[in-house]
Image (cartoon, rainbow, N blue to C red; front, side, top):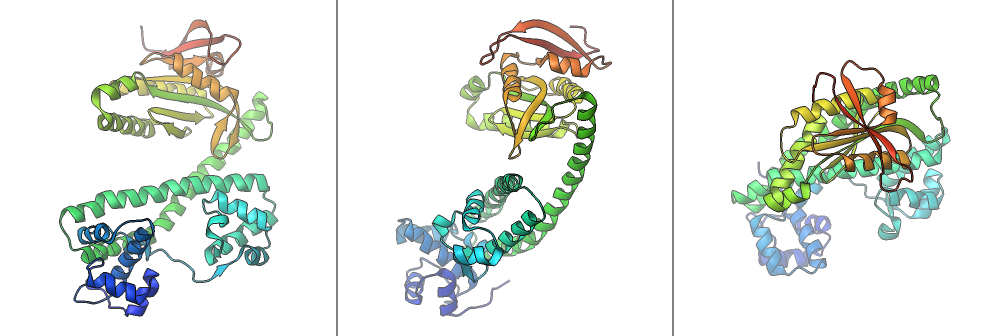
Length: 398
């Protein structure tokens, strides 16, 4: 569908460069035009050219990139709303009622330090007003700042994935097919305009699902902690901490190559995600290692036994599990108990599950699991040897 023509002055406003510069870029085909018409797609491409020029790229390089359609992605950016008005830090503070230092701190957490951008947008100030309202309602500042950091880290990953996947599976195929640069920009813009309106509702849907689930888990966890007399120090939680990794992964990478190794990691992590019980959560993945937490040590250990049975690829996974309390901060868990679980997995063999005495005691008698003591084991960083057990299915005979 052909796009509406815009004036040269409007194109210059969108691109952020003088109209004379746009004329020169059009004449030299740095920015290709259809029948000499300026459109928002062409102006967006000119804006990308201007940015690349600032980074030192030559016009010849940009002409080739424009002809190939590699600059066409800039058009999608126009679909993301932005306010025209901007605020100084002092004006923003007066508008929302927060101190300037706190606004700067929040903006740093969001990854947009005012020291770089110098001014805030209308959207920035609107968010600061909402944060001020939450603080006025009684949310502790330390907790709110952690939430901001978690939101920023998580949504940054989502946005990066959206852009990279769109590029890999939409933009690159269009380039490979030799589609005209401006037609490519319009096609991507049409697709993005259909996709973007679904993102907000979908994220709200997923967020509400998990919010209900973890609210219920928190209520149950409080009751059970009271019953067993677990430590209730502020900021600490009682959890089973589990690490799973692939034995001999470095050697596998050397033998099979990076691409095959990355494919294996994807299959490995996807298998973990697909099989985890509902009360367990992947905290993070680091290379071939996955960290999992759960308030239910028995269920987590049962999962580990089943997972090692069904994951038939090489190199084999190994598992270490410990049950204790740790500091919860910014969506992650820290402390000696977490470090202990990490040391335990390092002592396991491929296809083996090692657990601490705390896990075995918490599980107790089980018709599904059996624990075999291997004695006290010295672990790096821990002054005293630790009682470790192998965990197996109760039905196994080896």
